[in-house]
Structure formats: C-alpha cells, structure tokens
Length: 316
Image (cartoon, rainbow, N blue to C red):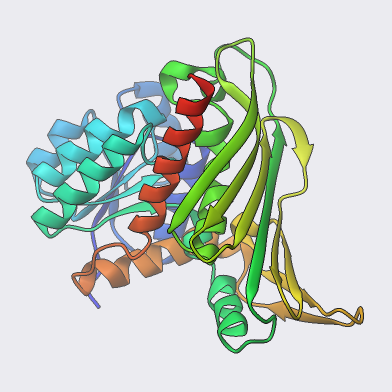
C-alpha cells in the first residue's frame, strides 16, 4: 500500500495529535496555517514540516494527496468543496458539516469526483466496534432492542470559545452530540422513522443540552443524553433480549462488558484509546488506496438529517 502525502489545515490540539500519529506512521505531511505565531509554535515541536500560508498555495503546489481539516466547523464545507474540486481526498474533523444539505452535496460531489471524503470521528475507527459487531451477529446478546448513549462535558462558559459561538458551528449537537448519534446509528442503522427531542439553549445562543429519542423501522429504540454544561458518563449501552453490552468512553472505547440476566459478565478488550487517531489514519489509507468511498458516510448524513429535524422542531 502506497504512502499517502497528507496536509493538515488548522493547528488545534487535535491537529497536534494527528501530526504525531502521521510521524509515528512515517507518513509525509505539510501544514496550512494563516497565523504566523501558530505556525512557528508548531514547527518548533515538529521539525522539517513545510508550512503553507493558505489552502490555495498548497493546492497549487500539488504536494498532498489528502487533506485533513481541523478548523472551526463553519469553515469545513467550503474547504471540503475546494479540496474536492482540486482532486484531493479529504478527511474532516467532526462535525464535518453544520447542516444536512452540506452533507448531501459534499458526499455526492466526492462520489462524482471518485474521491474519498470521510469524517474524522473516532467512533467509526476503533477496533472494539468490529468485535462488538461480531458479538451481536453471533447472537450472544439476542435481538437488538435499545441503544443508550450519553455524552456530557463541563465546558467553561466563555463567549469567545468556539463551542459557545453559533457562527462557528458551536453547540452541544454539533460538538459532542455527533458522537452519540454516530454510535447509535452505527449500531441500530440509519433507517430512522421517528425523532423527538427536548432541549435547552444557552444564553449565548447555542444549544446546551438535549434528550433525544429515536426509533427505526425495526422498532429499535435509541435514547441519547448530551450536554456541554454538565458532566455525564460517556457511556454506551447496547441492549438485546439475552444480554446488554456496556462501554465507557465509547468515543475512543477499548473495553466493553457483556452483562447477562443472571448477573454474570464477560469482558471484551480490543485496541487502545491512545491509538485512536492512528486507527483513523490507517483505515483511511486503506480506503483511499482501494478506491473506496467512506462506508460510514450514510451515518454522517443521517446524523445531520436528525439534527435538522431536531432544530426544526425546536424552531431554531
């Protein structure tokens, strides 16, 4: 498998982790940053990295096969489309989009261009989920009945913070709700027929917390609690007729427990939380080199569709 040449647009903490993972895999990469101070700080930590002042310069240079986008959410769509137009594959940090229409348009264009477009959502790439899929397919928990996914963080209230800025694509649904929705949809499928939600909006104008209920065409139920102003266990429960599976820190999960009706338990350990970004890179390399579209794109699109319904029902 050939080594792809990467370029990173946006230099936040996640980009730092991503760059370190690329270095661990010995993959060549460049950076794109409009701020000289940020660029200088990054280069001090990561030597021999070429820096571009803007996206246009990098795309004109033809020095990268794939772009990893790690900027604020409101800039994702325009950057994605620009990269696809120039024939580059794209891996974009979650949430990829700010609305359903962007998701539909971008994935359709990527398919037309025969390019890979995917969301850098760790739920899609952790090896534990393949093991859990095998457990479910083997009938060890019986027929799937319910999914419960909680995700709560206590984010400091600062008007300047992107998570509290609607114009930056902030809010609970887009920032952390995407993990809960992605996990639920990956397990229960994207054939959702009923969506209901109760939420509360922060004084800064973004959505702060939600309880979301889902039902699919097989009558599987999903219940999601998310919040950016109250700490919750990052816990996922997959409930079947014979047993349930419990995963803590499921967005980067490495350990799960099967709990049976008699109270007995069985542990599953697979992968490493610390290697989450490495798994993303490895799998995306596979997809691109095989000429594949992102198999998780339908989850990303349906997650945005559900958000659209929630916002519409709330009048936001």
